Amino acid sequence: MRVSLFATCLGDQFYADACADAVRLLRHLGAEVDVPAGQTCCGQPAYNAGRRVDAQAMARHTSKVLDGSDYVVLPSGSCAGMIRCFYPELLVGDGARAHALAQRTFELSQFVVEVLGVQRLGDGLSGSTVGYHHSCHALRELGVREAPLELLAGCGAAVVDWPAAEECCGFGGLFSAKLPEVSAAMADRKLDTLPEVDFVTSTDGGCLMQLSGRAGKRGRGPVFRHLASALWQGVQGGVRA
Image 1: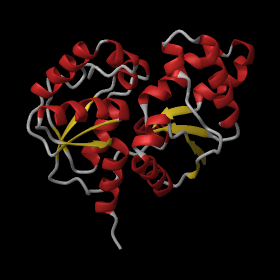
Image 2: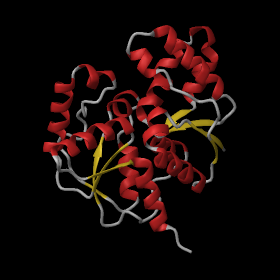
Image 3: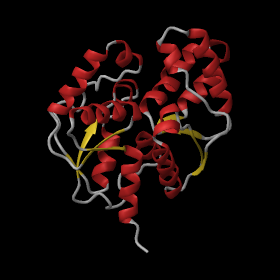
């Protein structure tokens, strides 16, 4: 099985360890993984800003870069949602390629559970209490709800009941820049309802940046870790020599 990892902009710049852990996890599960040269932005910021021509150019470039793999996996529900839900609409002149790419593109936990059929990875998170944030794009565009929870539990973690787990963190890309006061209030609401946990995780780096940044501003809060890194720890603790 040939899998291409699409690192995403935030992954490349802020969560390089999570990208590496995603590759390690996929290879551990038997996939042949590459990280195609030439990948850039998926085009979502341009698309959300109404710059359709720019978004089309980036989508066209990305679709060509990712040709040839059996699957495309992203450590991001947001960018995976862009490819799956909006590339077919943007690339109307290259519909066959766009639809084919959309059908073989998955967020990491979704791929592990739905394509590879794996729910248990190891016991490296045994004894850990975890707060899981459902990012808007992963949950509402891709329908990813149970897969990350199953994998965390399959690593021995106890995922706590968090009343605001499915509420928006307030990041929203351009939204947080244009309406910072509202954005901060939304993050505060989530953090105020968070039970005591060992760490908070999510599929999306943008959400983790938003919540960890706000927690740092408030001077309190748990550790924040990308789901890919949390799952790889789960594997490492479960591997026996």
